[in-house]
Length: 482
Ligand code: AMP
Ligand code: ZN
Image 1: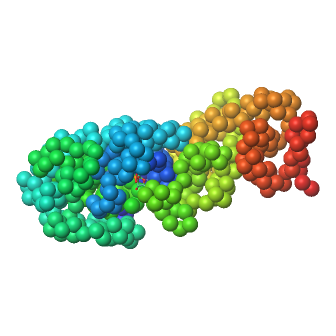
Image 2: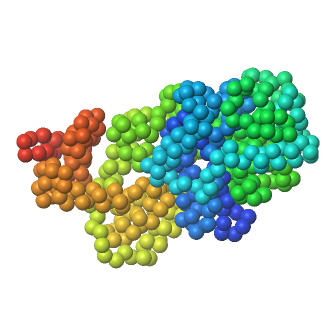
Image 3: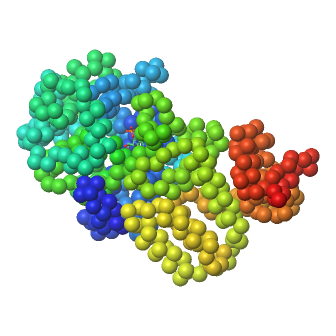
């Protein structure tokens, strides 16, 4: 696979240190609130990357942390503790908050077909490791104690600004966040490795350390968790673009100072999901969750489809209209797959040919929209239905849009519609177009469930397709608008 490496600012073949095996680290969620759909965009794209590498034949070892301590309101170590803020907001303990939002995050992941990484490590479970690494950094002169806290001394490095040099957006975040000066720091970009209780008197989670009772900084968590599970060399590190600076810059600084050699081979950053041109953020309090999308009648996988249609290195503008378009395209795609006849023998040579095309095109810097285009190419091709279904099944190992399962369910519903009654007791009459029957059936179901918003949306979608629906005593009757 060819991947853009944010550290070198170049696309290059991904070359793991150990042949055939890739170690991959993902910055996990800060569990003080629900994940918003911007966070989920990042996890969807990282999931596709993980699955694409497996599809290519690599053995992938994927590690992710859960940030349940240490992440302050600003990424530059200032402001309130995010977990404490969540606990206060909900009058619960920090651990209760962490447990609740970790579960909520994995619920969202399940609905979005995001595979759980091989290792999921809560940051609070690694305190001894942070203390060990920080002690070594102090011994080797890379870290110092001041005002009760331990800081990393960025002046000791020749090359600190690995990411901030080139990413204006990320730098802007860093600069904006560092307004609150810390008099203990020797250099403005020094960052905290260990906070003592001097920071927050009501800090809920704290541990004994050689420097006093306190808690770790956010950046050291990811370095230590990654090094513990993936060893001294990491092949691939992922995160959202806002993590590039200062979080990933600091991870590199402390990991390489600790190890004494280059650490991570490739950095992959997913750009933001924006609303009205602005980054969606948890701390602003105004954000959209997957549950809200579901409440409005959207299928979580329609959101996944929406994300896959655009490239991970471009910001993605969210609007209800954009999501509607993606949702309609996804439903139409399912209806087209449902119209294929299952069974029979697939032509293995054709399947292998399409698989190769997928690897070549999606493998060019994770071009997921090209993967979706290939799905349509297969459907349009002259291959027989069994071959088409086999190719789509194969692609879905990476895209994870449940294409065949959802299409099979649709086909089943349609079978009962053709015979006059659907399994749900709806009668649909029309000239017999499976795609339209399926949409009309969905509308009947939405109305029965009193989901009038979805029913209206489906009616509009049908109208756009030149179809009108009448609700009669005998059921829904559709006809083409002449
Ligand atoms: P957090 O829970 O804030 O630690 O963030 C979890 C992940 O979501 C990180 O990889 C962030 O970089 C990423 N992220 C945060 N905001 C957005 C956004 N608006 N769009 C895409 N990814 C984001
Ligand atoms: Zn991280």
